[in-house]
Length: 548
Image (cartoon, rainbow, N blue to C red; front, side):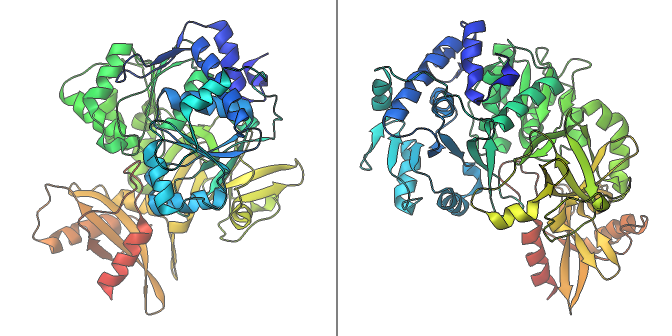
């Protein structure tokens, strides 16, 4: 069986256990004797699949998984896939309130978690209406249920062979979006979605079996075994990559001769600063992949100093609902597209990857039930980014209204196009340029202002750390307002002079000259995971209060 023909995403594991049985699949350097070969991981996940099935976690059973990245996380995830269960993956970095909402919507029957997760579940009443089966990874306290050891013992008894043969359109997992620019929603992944992602990542980045991966985001860690790589799990708080200890990351890369590094922009920035100061070199790396938010050119330039000549940092574009969509390397960004970006041309996110179609449609906040070619905007004009292809999810779980607003049915192909909720345009070379979130555009009586192209102009001031464009209602009219967070070296006095200089930058560009109001904010509200997504909705409320 070819890897690409597997219907159950866990089918990759027994194939690799046969082809490279003694190759390490998982290494957790900061835990004693914490490593598994492909043969061991396959056998362990088989035992767990049998044990889970024995306690009722079988085909179609929605199962919350809240386990720290490590051996148990990998073994349990592959066991759930093998058993045909449906893991529910929720990023703990989204906050307690959103976690509870996501769990209520997912209506899970089973919950597998560490003691801390179970304590929170009991205390806050997460999913108490639907939960029937509880498994604890670690010491089991007053909440009852099964321990992981009990599940493993049940799995030793033998029985069904795994993985189950699942249909390509059968639900494999529910992955919740971060909710950083809206309400978190559960994207429904099928086994074919995962299989297409694995194939696209392999093709796009030339990943070879036998490589060593350092994944600093748990869900991406799952791709390593499917691609035949050894996953080295770093010692870090995965919910706060921007606060990672860079020494631990660099040590792991050097000690294990890591070839592939995946990290958020915040992590790449922090590690790059630390490594550049010490003139560190990372000759084993063949590629670096950073996703989740745009990566600043300075961050790319700085981290590139750690790499061998010709080794690139790739910044794929996509979302939980469709990933990957586009990709671009640091060479093209630094040598070509960055000069356009700083002038207000948007951020180039590259060309669509193989098998993905990207179109730009006219901007609308209303549902679009059926696709029409009349929706498409001409090259160079800003509209909403819409994508189709094998990695595009078809719906959100138990959110018909969200599905209606994000999905377009194509009667010609019978397929689904996903509305990214992002604005941008295509250039005459087929590259996609990102211009900000649709929900964050500022619509005024004189025209529409797009966040990324406007902010790029003002960010050129040497004392501006970052800026954020928001709309404020003034006497029934929407007014564009620029919020500014200054760098540490900026003077605390003479704000009028800074305001004049900042507005002079805007006056020199046709798309920013009408922005006449500047407000200084001490520290923007940012997303925890990437420390790159600005909560402009919160800033808009703050700006309205300041101007009232």
